[in-house]
Amino acid sequence: MLLPNIDPSRKGLLDDLEVFIGNEKLTFLLDKMEIVGSVGLNRATLQSLFPSVVRFFGPDDLMRRLKSPKIMGKVITIEGLLYTGSRMLFITEVDDGEEAGTI
Image 1 (tube, rainbow, N blue to C red):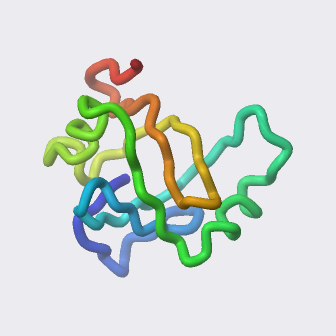
Image 2 (image 1 turned 135 degrees about the horizontal axis):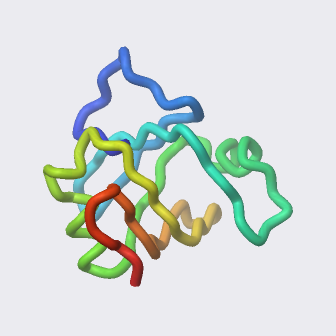
């Protein structure tokens, strides 16, 4: 779930991340994370992102969907390639349960 401002009463089940989409700073409440094609562990991967700041980037259409007011505060599924060294997530899919977001 992406939120424009963190509400201290709302927490994800896993670590919350500060996310930048362009120059906009958001809070990403993370409830579930699956690593595909890697031997890493979910918690260890998140701990390697300390401080918990990630920059989302990808195709313009997916970035527009993530910044859309319709998606704020909604449960969404994001797929992408996480580059822990540069703290970047290349978004490959956004699923908000409404329209297809696969590229």
